[in-house]
Length: 189
Image 1 (cartoon, rainbow, N blue to C red):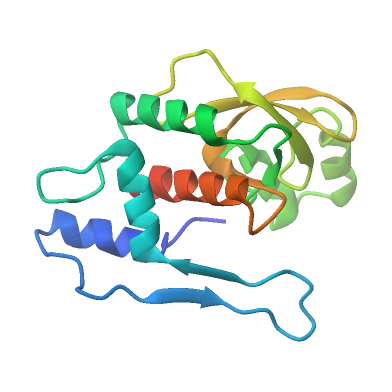
Image 2: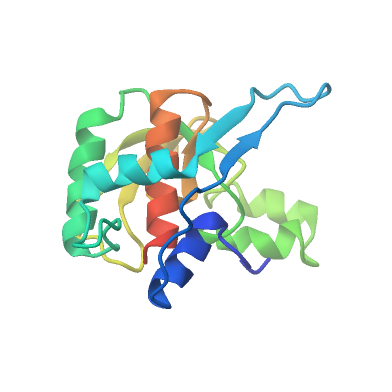
């Protein structure tokens, strides 16, 4: 599955590159719970999210959030190390990024049986993991922050890209912290 648009953040970045200013009033994004939906609703204000991210990585002379680079990644890592609460349970966002191997099986011609066999040795976006900590290797603009995780079901350990993970418990501090990081990493590279 090819990524098409990354959403409003993509539009803002595109407009910045063209030299245009962001719209004066950004839309408030609200995803409401339907009657048959058991998930809690998520309400997010893009402007507030950019302010939170800017407070972590800094702003340029025009007041825009700084792009992903070695220095801003180091700042984000330091912030997350201080603010993520322990016992953070995470899962994959989608079958892309570090879980890209699964796309062949989820939307392609790959068999379900083969997919299940491979999931025993490879990390899956459908699995739940315990976030153990950050990888000591140097992170770069291509992969971003790397984290060590332990799969809950079988205790296997993996090193995964943080931008491909989300907290399992929505409407929590950890969920917001990881979502903000992913949005920044994807849209400000």
